[in-house]
Amino acid sequence: MDVLRIDSITKKFGSFYAVENLSFNVPAGIVYGLLGPNGAGKTTTIRMVMNIIIPDKGRIAVLGEAMDEKMKERVGYLPEERGLYPKMKVFDLLLFLAEIKGLKAGWAKKEIDLWLERFDLTEWKQKKVETLSKGMQQKIQFIATILHQPELIILDEPFGGLDPVNTKLLKDIMLEMKEKGTSIIFSTHRMEQVEMICDNICLINKGRPVLEGNLSRIKREYGRNTVLLYYEGNGSFIKNLPEVAHFDDYGKFMEIKLKKKEDSQSLLLKCAAKVTVNRFEIKEPTLNSIFIEKVGEQNEKNIGGH
Image 1 (cartoon, rainbow, N blue to C red):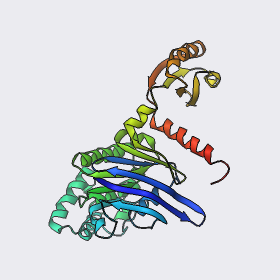
Image 2: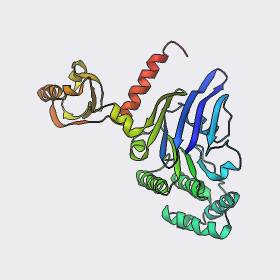
Image 3: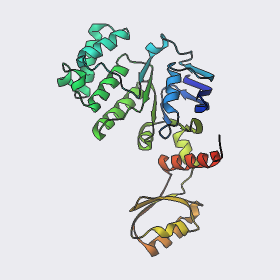
Image 4: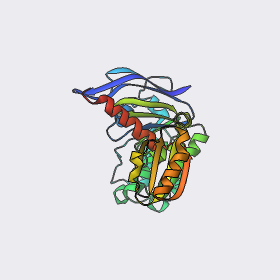
């Protein structure tokens, strides 16, 4: 069963298309990444899924049904704009939010204590929310999102405000929940997070779908024609080589897409003649390079108007 089905939805604000003719399905039991640059339409899409705003066209089904207040009890939603009551104490706030979701106080109190311990927040349970750092408040809101053990979790930029340690903790918890059968959809513009945890993705840009499907399959389709070159010296000669389709230069490191994978040995010889090659690796392209290429292609197609 698909936990989410989006069929040709469109949303305009005045003459601006926030989302245009977007379709994708999310199978049960996976982590699904809704990707795109800032302003791509990710948050607008999620708000339509949650029935906060209504699409102008198209249909949305969540867990096989239209989203309503009853359905929201089966879904955990972490919005991009965090909303906590700053004057409430952490434990009281989480208990209040749990009871709104219909949880019995006795069971909820035990779960709250377990999650506060897991996120290293036990000593803050009697502190007011406003005294917590942005990262701590983010963890509190995540606990509130999952406390009622929803079947589907929708997270809008969940790693915002978290340091690397807490980003890893959140990632690990998401994967644990997936192993227990929970379906997870999350939006982000940070590609490295997606490659760690996503099974399927939908890449959107300027409100339109660009790429959708299984992440491993997408990367295989792009082939092993990507070279990672770690070097010392002046790499400007790369742009003139006939083997190179395009490249991203980061100073001491390049990600190079070849026109044909057979060109790799020729490229290596030419690089070795010009710079010191510390590492030369042929691999599948990173999602970040696919992202840049696909968004660039769409932007070129869109030049000249909508």
